[in-house]
Image (tube, rainbow, N blue to C red; front, side, top):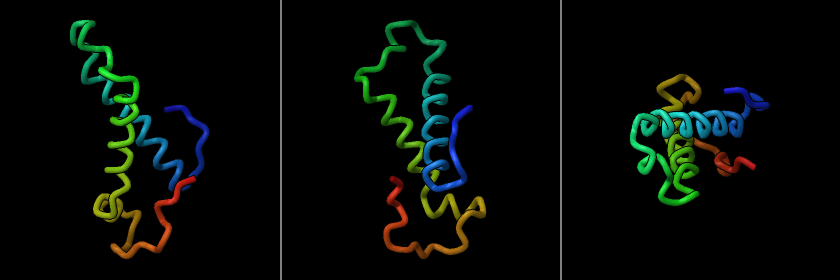
Length: 80
């Protein structure tokens, strides 16, 4: 993924959001054309957001070594 991001929580979110789009494409690329179109324009965005939010869960962050404990400071999820 080529993107201008920084090593921040927002950059982490954006990278995983874009990887969600890639996974969505990979799952439907071999289907007939009538199955490849999204039922709604926002559906692909929802897939990207789902992947990004799952990657930002405290359990996942702790598992990959980016979070030492499950105690989060207030306002940690404000990305913008």
